[in-house]
Length: 54
Image (cartoon, rainbow, N blue to C red; front, top):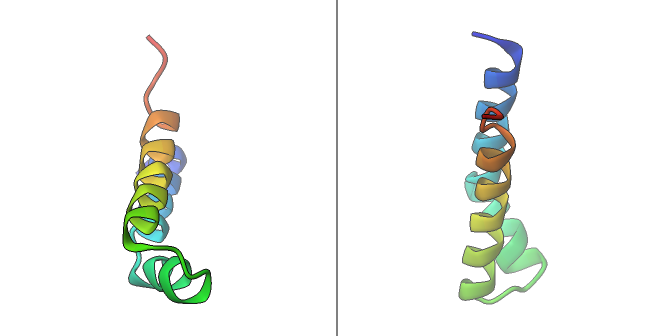
């Protein structure tokens, strides 16, 4: 597996991990919609970064 692909998979794993949710909701006291928006932004950031240039 190429290094860039593995890095993207690792980033998605971290962005969607239950502890990320816990950090945002409990530790940072974000609302559920704010937490959802933040995690969505994290995932989109990873996916957009990993899209090859056309």
